[in-house]
Image (cartoon, rainbow, N blue to C red; front, side, top):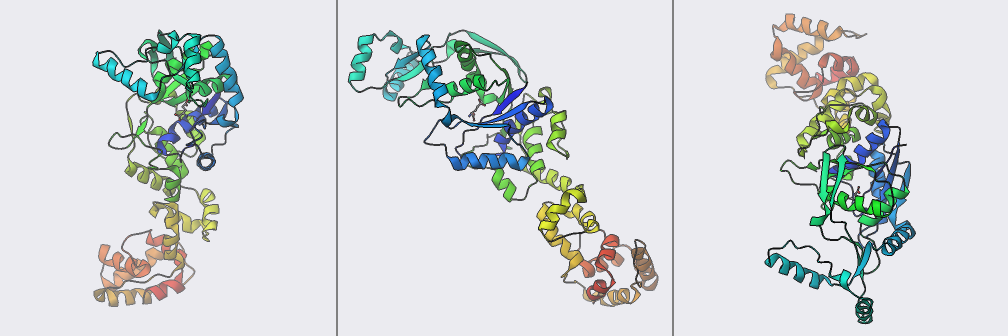
Length: 441
Ligand code: GLU
């Protein structure tokens, strides 16, 4: 059974870049009939909020992502405590008493001597008496994981073979002085406990993976498969920042973008698949595999989102649109089919539908007054059909000698008050004779 997890830290709203791992995990679960766990990485109590966690759930629901399971790390401390104790017992987790100040002085000294600023493991040399003395001074330990210091190899499902040499890394702090956990240990403990088979996340976690594989092994857990995807950047190649709220999903939703358009941009940018309207997440899921994800950067272009959003609306079926139209007090399949290709956002339909239902302020230039008045007189009798427009404009052409733009533009300006918009042939029938007569005055 495939089990994946999306593991955001609930410290703000999700942005477009976060949607990428959220959805890539979802697609993978769909393709393999697997389970999708939403894991709130909320061990940082100072920065995590319930409001943010609820917002993340709402953002995922907007896409139609329904996790099979939701877990909050803040409620799972007992598991982490047990893992911590096991690592202490096996000698892999050791107490350190250095202050931040001492550590930064040591790093500076190492740099000055041309050595990499790695933690020197001084704490490993402390005797029981040393520790007792430090604790008597009121110092509290933080805990570091003793790395094996060997090359850790894994076959990344996107990036191919990866080697992280933990010899070039400082032993990571897993437990803070106040006993709280940093991200690394709870993540591994949960991945083991929840039976995660595939860890799909941004490539900024590749070096973490080296450490985490060592922790999986130290805890006797089975190591999942990893897939690290390229990160979404803005046009200048800058990463998105959750804290800045740049392009948050909730902003995009409020700006009226279609969830599917945002999902397509978030996941297919920086892949070999074309950015084009897809009907559903399931359809994307069935096409997007790891090998389609490029190794280069994934640059997001806002203009492409606008274009895609419009294309999705231009082909949206009435069946899909109808409930949303009803919520706006608009109905009618013919109206939708006539107007949809003018939309850039769904809500634009409110303004466009006024071309059918009115009120319209006709625009009639002085030099066209006589022409428009002739047009009014020649307006065919009802019933109207698809053929009415042709009958009317042919008669008008014969009567006035006008053709092309000189014939059509004044009619458009009078009937709609604007020089662009939907096809007049179909609009005419929807507006009906009575209202047309009014607009041709
Ligand atoms: N909370 C981590 C993050 O947001 C999760 C990383 C992971 O998927 O392991 O970066």
